[in-house]
Each structure stands twice: as structure tokens, then as C-alpha cells.
Image: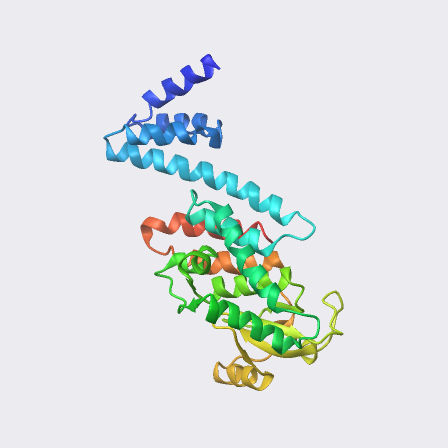
Length: 290
């Protein structure tokens, strides 16, 4: 242990070396210690006055956290039934690495319990959707925000759970997760440029292959606001947007596919030259979910 501490101390003393090659060697050695070294790096950052050295330390902390996140995504995807909510929490962790995720888990559980108390076996799917809408958007006062790549935090599940205002991705993922937890027969489907939940008939089976899956859909929910709409409304959207309707659009997205879609959209928030490394890393994370 003493030897390890001495080596870390020696490497820390060389971290401001102007020679890039020397620094890369030091950085690689420090990276081998993994995330347990982050508190030491943070302490070093606080006691360092040189701005460029601080930037080097920040980048090392970022890379260490990213490595942990890659491992967490691989582990999450390999589960028999990866939880949509836990996948969304991993995306949140990219942007807010120090956020207490248990606070978000408790908040979700509170909302789930409130909805569960209002549900019973005699409700029709539309009545179930109305319960969700009333609890989320009236009682809980969730608001929808326009999708804006200038506001990355609005893509994250923390947005509807903390500020009660998320964009289409955040709000729809919250809605879809609640449906999954409450065994409501619905799914996030693959409509281009939209976040939409389809409510299916009782004889729908997600494991079957149907030539026309839309025939089993009773209605659709727009996840940002909880409003229900019909097939005719969706057909008008396709017509207005010059999109040729395809059966594949009506197929449910698996939880890894939903999180992949979220990561790729979230990546667009980091388009400036100074942040493009984050965009690349988010795309790499999305590719892990192939």
C-alpha cells in the first residue's frame, strides 16, 4: 500500500510536465488505478493553481468515469430484461456523474405508487392512460419542453423527476417505464422523429411476428403531454412529413434500442468543437447497445 501511495505521489508531481509524451505515459499509469483514484485526483485539482494542469486532471477524471460507464452499459445490456429506467439513469450519470441516483429511484417509486392506487382490473386501456395522464400531468404537474439541443439536461430522466420538466425523450421514457412496472399493455414504438407510446389490444403478443402490427394498436400516447390520439392522426402526421408509413414503425422498441435512440439524440447536444469529444463518446456508448 505504501509503495502504491508513493508511486501515485511521484506521478502527481510529474502531472504538469510540459512534454505531452511524458504526460501521456503518466496519464496511462494513473488510469490503470481505475476510478478509486478519482478522489485523489479531485484533491489534486483543488490544490493546483495552473489552469492547463487542472484541465489535464479534469480529462483524466472524465475518462475514468467513462470507462466505468462503458462497463455499466455492457453489464446492463447483458441482463435478461434490462430495466428501461436503469438504462436512462446510466445516461444521466454521463452528464451528472455525482448525482445521487437513489433519490431519482425513490421519486419514481412515489409516482408509481400513486398511479397504482388509482388502477384496477376493470379499467379499459384508455382509462388506464387517463389515470397516468392525470397523475403525471395534473397532480404531479409534469411539463413538456420542446426538444432543444441547447438544453442537454432536458433529455435526461432526472429532468421530469427533479424539475418536473423534460423533453419528449425524458417524459416518454418516464411514461414507458411506469407502464412497464404497472403491467400496462403498451410500448415505445419506432415512429420517425417522434416519441410515441402505443396501447395494444389484449390479444397482442410482443413475441409474435405480425405482418401489420398497427392492427393491434387501439390508440397512441404522445409522451411529452400524455395526450391520446388515433391512427387517423398518425396517418396525417406521415402525410404532412412526407414519410412513407412502414410496418416496422409500429414494432415495439426493446429497452436497449430506446436507450440507444436517447444516446444518439443526446449526443447532438455536444456539437461545438470543444465538446465534440463528448459527442463521439456518446455515440460509442450507443454502439455498445447494438
